[in-house]
Length: 121
Image (cartoon, rainbow, N blue to C red):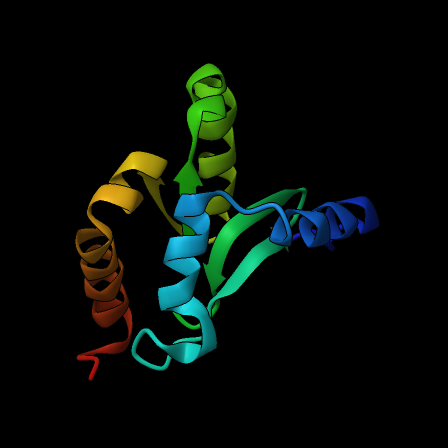
């Protein structure tokens, strides 16, 4: 992976303070190793991109897509492809899915993590 650009780092810091309701909701379940003692980082720079959430232990990027992503499908595809080339798994959820069914989102994340590190408690 390429070193993180200083501008990307600054932008990531700013994004931490401007989260959507869906991002805030998911973060309440991922922060402080609440999900099976795995460390998730929010707004984490990876190369020239910023992952909404990243867990290095299982090489997982979790993206929460809002309305702006409707107009940038090609960009998101390119970004996902690059992240996957780095050996990362990308899981995408819409704001609506996170807000309407947070348990289902957390279950999918938990299942993936368990497949990478074994049964989680």
